[in-house]
Image (tube, rainbow, N blue to C red):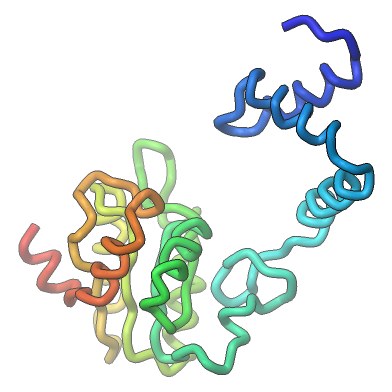
Length: 206
């Protein structure tokens, strides 16, 4: 791809570094920005810059946040006795889109995958166990992707929770085994949240 402007080429190269963005798509995006008012482009660049500089992770659930506590943890309308355990921030967004869940979350930051060198110590498992030990939780819902790694993570954490007087459930298998949670449609995900099942039933039937 030959450019008549080094400024244009540099901008295209930067956009092309984003996941899923090729050179042609990057060029379309850059040309779109060139047509916009300078004020709009400045707002765009400022939003990206502030995002990177000011974004933090919630000290309680590890979700993306503007402050020490994210909006979900700080909300007075959420059910404080229920924690939904997810793999990443995208899963929080996916579940929130269903409008079927009104409890809190805990973002693990991944799932146990020995082949990829990811063990329990690389995840936010200890902080989850600390929350359960200090908070008055009545139910833990595992909403992890239905694959071997997700099942391993559920099994590991549920074993750690033995002896705790807490209900442990997992979302129903409306989602195909081996699929990724973030790609499930909202209706299927909402049904899975509503029809969650006790973990001991789930583990026994594997």
